[in-house]
Image (tube, rainbow, N blue to C red; front, side, top):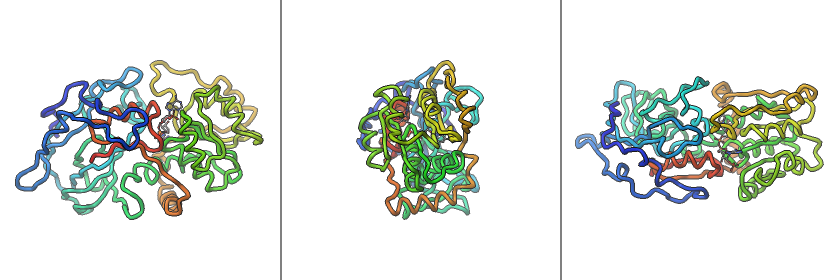
Length: 382
Ligand SMILES: NC(=O)c1ccc[n+]([C@@H]2O[C@H](COP(=O)([O-])OP(=O)(O)OC[C@H]3O[C@@H](n4cnc5c(N)ncnc54)[C@H](OP(=O)(O)O)[C@@H]3O)[C@@H](O)[C@H]2O)c1
């Protein structure tokens, strides 16, 4: 693919029209010189000859800023045998992408500079040289952060839009949902009657963890989130108690939220830091902690100290286990059938925060890290 950047926008051009906090459902995209160009279609086939991509222009130092991203228009290559051309309709905005923006050794390779970012996306096949996929198929794949994806047909997975809208396969029915399910069921070995605490509870993974735990017979489900509106939403979703972690020390809020419960059996940690320390303090003997994420530390420029009370895990005989969703693909069929039923019956509700147009994607990512989303953060490519 020629990414030399026909009409490439310079720094500052990406994300300027992005959504600010509380922009759920609004259309924040204003005029953008690159995005507003007429589509460049092949006269014979009617297919696009070029497409917009979001590139990593520089590596963030601490919190990402719009200047770390660049919008570029690239030529689309001719399809090789076995390949498909997908028009992306929605892309997933995920916290783990922050780690891939640093040039450090990790469980997934760093993003390359001046290349398109990668991430989950759903879209429609508009040209195919693959026997596996036909024009019109709606698929999920990993070539997001661009308007058009050219990839092997086998690297896409068809989705059933009669079960849920395509974007749900980025959230509740996708990697996000499987993370919640695997972390709760297998990593934390959830058992009915457990008292469950989940941080980042109004986010994509956290809101599913809490609802699944309730559906599966948890004794008490407690969530923490970053605003009064999110706390209210958690109570509407069926959480027994919820608190805003900005209101005071997490340990005090957690103690009040526990009510008459002795302590926590399962802590699903999306946040790390003060939340993890508070949870360790309130765990019951033989409690289980699923270490899913540590978003409070993703933008630190120097390593944060670990929980000061980790030694409590010895006397309480706690289990703390990190996990990656990629290691739990074997649970996908069981998860899909359970989640499909919960969605159909209304026992699981899914919130999406939708930001419109590809140029808004960098700002959507920055805003998500600051808590602008309730439920799954999605960029719709209308
Ligand atoms: N292990 C895996 O395989 C795997 C897979 C997917 C996701 N994850 C992890 O799971 C976690 C949730 O991911 P997600 O996709 O569902 O994102 P999300 O929760 O939908 O969005 C991120 C949320 O993090 C919260 N947050 C930001 N800074 C915070 C801080 N300092 N303290 C507490 N909360 C903070 C914000 O909500 P507030 O307004 O509440 O602050 C924000 O909305 C992340 O840590 C992610 O890295 C892990």
